[in-house]
Image (cartoon, rainbow, N blue to C red; front, side, top):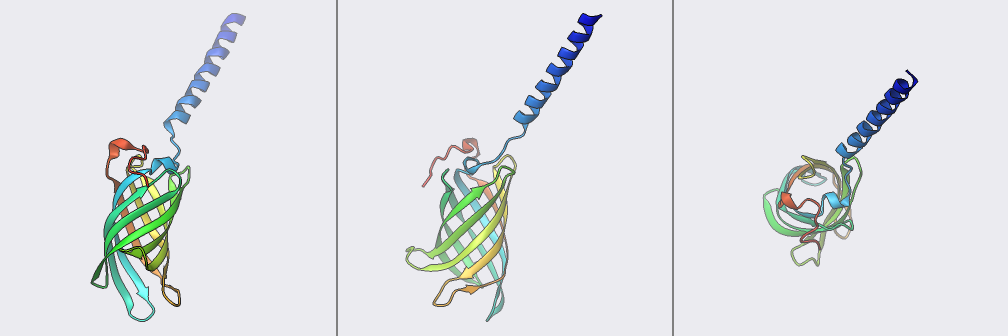
Length: 171
């Protein structure tokens, strides 16, 4: 009888430990490595210009993320119907819960003139093959930097989903 009790307790403890290990393995934490690689994105929304009122904005482009928390990108953007080609440079931090913050600067195509700076709050979805984001701040550069309220969202997909976190094409 005593042997059956000891065996039952042992099997119950083993079963609970295996369940805990399986649960921990099933929950993957995100990190900077989760976004390393190249992504294609679109941005759409409205910015509230202090002089012109609401201005529709849109962009399409690519980001390349390295594992060290840096990224670069190129885009075609439209602001109030004026189309331009821009370069983006910035930093990012990914949290274990798969949320992230991107801080970026947008330059003209020559990378000589800073046009604007923004901060984005991001969430990684679909096993880190897609991301969704919202711009939380926007500052237009110039002789006097001007904060502008944004209502802009972003949707992105990993260009090479078989290479999750491999960092190929890193800057």
